[in-house]
Every structure is written in C-alpha cells, then in structure tokens.
Length: 115
Figure 1: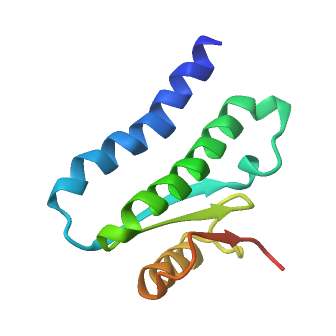
Figure 2: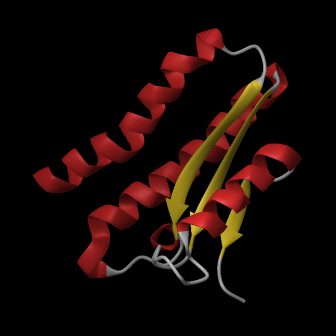
Figure 3: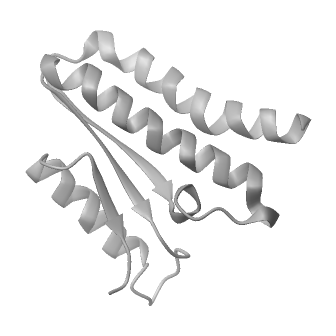
C-alpha cells in the first residue's frame, strides 16, 4: 500500500505539480504527457504502475478540458509496448510521434501501438 501511494505521488502528483508550475508562464503552448498501455489493460504484477498510468491518462484529459480554452494544448501519448531501440517502440519513433502531436494538436490522446 505504501509503495502504491509513493508511486502515485511520483507519477500523477509529480506531473500535476510540474504543470501547475509552468501554467502561470504560458499564454499559449503545449503540454505533452507520456502514458502506458497498462492504463487500459492493467496487469496485477504491475498494479502500482498501472494505477499511475491510468492517473496520468485521466489527468491529461482533465487538463485538456481545463486548459484548451486558454490556448494551451494538453495531450498524452499512450505507449502500448516496451520502449526499445531498433523496434517500432524506439525512442526515435516515439519522439517523432510527440512532435506530430505538437504540430497537429488535434487529439487529446494518441495510442502508440504496432499495427
């Protein structure tokens, strides 16, 4: 239980704290968060991580609703796989998707998954 609370503080509360710190300095802008497939399909052995990813996803949607009228785009990239160089889930592919989100700003969530 204690580990779950600590993990939640780091992932979700940490993300919210970071956003709250930058909002006063933003007139327009972009905030991008990283989520994971465990938010959608939890696995008992990774329950704490899954709860954190679900919290990040919920936070992104809530912040998007709150901040989009102020000209601030909030999006989350939900990565449904393990980040690994030389695969579809390479850091370069993920970075390119983040950049595309920044450019387009038309979806609150992008599912990053191999099709």
